[in-house]
Length: 556
Image 1 (tube, rainbow, N blue to C red):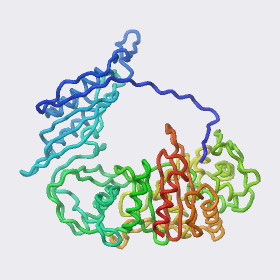
Image 2 (cartoon, helix red, strand yellow; image 1 turned 120 degrees about the vertical axis):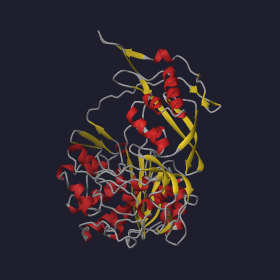
Image 3 (cartoon, one colour; image 1 turned 180 degrees about the vertical axis):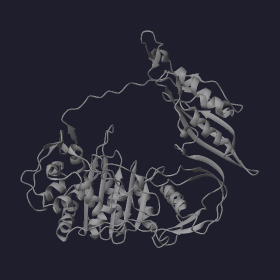
Image 4 (cartoon, rainbow, N blue to C red; image 1 turned 30 degrees about the vertical axis):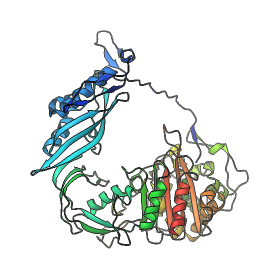
């Protein structure tokens, strides 16, 4: 999609941050002294004064302060002095809880910390330790980092407390625990009966964790002994993140869980996302909802299932169905596509400020004309898009049950400029590749089938449904729009050679403080549907498009 512009914009500036370079070495198991590699830190320091009040330091911490605070915290932690280490942080109470649990609950001892070369106020470091449980010991090693920040109320420099300082997998409310795992391990199988492992499919780590969390206690296995991250309980309306195993003392006996994943497509998906930084993709079967592949180039977070990103112009599939339903657009009828449209105080424009004179709605959809959609905002109610997404496409109701944690999209009711922006996949609209693959699948099949990774027959869970389907006339036009885009529009290059039973939509979504937009692509071919995103990739047809098209070709 193109860029949007506010009628009036406030100029923004960013403060410069300059820091000295420091390093630390471990000598004989203890932290050695820091050495300064950069100078001039005191010249960067600033302070503010008010008559009759003590001066409060402001600005980024100096190199000397970074040296002192990181040394104090890491030395105290390594020495087991919890109170002293916690006092060097911005939240002594929370730090005390995590650091106490590190020894008491996780049974971690013999901590040796080696600090690396800092970058500004951040100091990377490595940890080597021993985990001991009932007479058995296992080594533990990992990398983390800390950041020194200045406390606002008094200007004192302290370690900015986050649980991830102690271990990078810890988030607020999580705990490190060694003992009998609360959940037995599982042996996950693909649809052909082959075992799914991270050695074979590197990006499935979060999926396998989720399967264990959901089915470990019911799949017939027995728990082993582990050091694991125990995630905090889920809040209302959210799904609990799966626990993560860090060290295994005894394996336990795994239960078996069969998934819908295709071994061939999963392998192809892994290879495709590896070609682009921060790429994610999902492939599913429109006729059933079965998920055939899921892959993320970055393995730490399952963006494909749990991401919450503006989908850009791929959202125009849903918006088009709404406009056609309401007789505000028709595939082959003339439809305005001016350079600019102003609504709710925002001035919207098309990519490169193009316009289509005397064009049809199909031409606007195929070329991804933003103003063709924004121009219809005055004729819509604030809740119209939300209801269309929920009632037809099964989105934004927080009730999907795919077998592992997932996010089923968000299309909030908005007004004025934000409502208009939501029509083109910006504003408050949030999706992920799973959601957008489901959108393409719904258009292809004519009815919403909730995606799933594990058959509902396994645990008799209820899948989400949509309350209505599109009329035959609207569905026919929507398929025509996507087919035309795949053949002649912005998706044509990526989808070349895949026709004629196909359809696609490209998108690019702007993100604040990001130079390039996120590139999106959603498409179907035969009884396959897929969607992908490449964050900070640029236009969807050039980035996510080749990934999606390659998988549709491989699976057909």
